[in-house]
Image 1 (tube, each protein chain N blue to C red):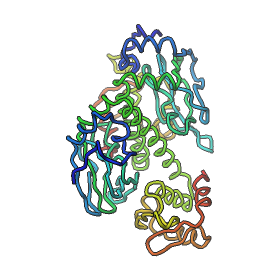
Image 2 (image 1 turned 60 degrees about the vertical axis):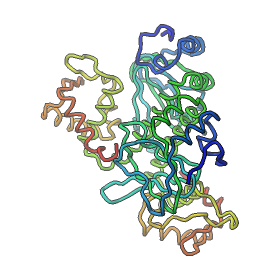
Image 3 (image 1 turned 45 degrees about the horizontal axis):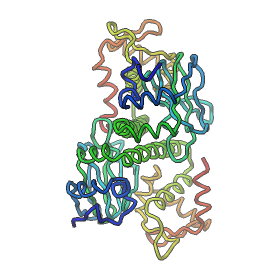
Image 4 (image 1 turned 60 degrees about the horizontal axis):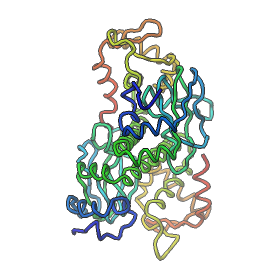
Length: 234
Length: 231
């Protein structure tokens, strides 16, 4: 995609950079087309820059020493990837992989820092973005112990909706992109527990499940379920 | 007491370090300074975020409560450091409470002034971003540690956290400048009071630290560091 004339108005680069700098980004970024379920970067890699999801879907994860996978974040089009590498250590603490086929733009640290210094809206956005991530990270870790399975799944679904949106606006079908196994990892519960919760949510007419398709029937109920546990911490 | 940002000698303060000379008098004009006694609450979990705090002097703990009555310390802060940045983002409600360890002087900068300062001073915006990035990393490292470390590792990390925040006594260079109560150390480590007592006495037996009443003296800093790196 061409930054100078990008149809994705949700992209933070597009939204917060001045036209001259979009031109600069177009010339300096490296675009990659990556097929589904491929690694974007791996834990321990040296951080050379940041990634912007131009299209597609990706997951950010870490593996425990037992090899269990935890998905800590998902990113859809126009969203940032690899910001956890930005810090004094400059080595990725996590890995990222595509969920679906994606176009990803790589912006080197040097150019990204230039962008931030030249575009104050971007600098402001980035600060607030990190503030949000810090809040969410601490909240997630604190609540994880206290949350019921229903609340965990509701919170995960809301994050999917926030990142990927709906694939069909009329039926409110969640643009899930990932397998139910991935959704279970993202919710930090087991696959059988996820199935059980989805059935409960169907019975309560909050969602509708046909095969692997999930449609939201009552978004406000889902949101309040997701928020219930974290009310104290938000 | 009123202090002027433009003539302040706290050179590590973000405002002093990264705001232009034109901006410092503006900050001075809009900020309010308050003297808090020991044990005072600066802001509480659930309060709306109205601004950001900068510590001029004193020592402060930032805590979050869970399960009703338990608390966990998420940050220790001293002179020249920022406070309340965890409130930015989300729905602008503090997820944490800040309480003074000792009498402290804290400046408050209203949020709209802080936002304007960020937009006007690119260095400040950039450094704030990097600051958050580091906090995020530190926070996640701490979470991982909580899940996997042994009790001695947790207590060792807590002692290092205290050293990083408050340092050593200026004249007696192995004595901690400030030692929080054993209960507070337990809240930093995410363990119980009894465990802290037990681990501290084990560390003393192996001559890594020495307990002098309430305060801790570090005899073998390197060993303490290796304990922390165990994960």
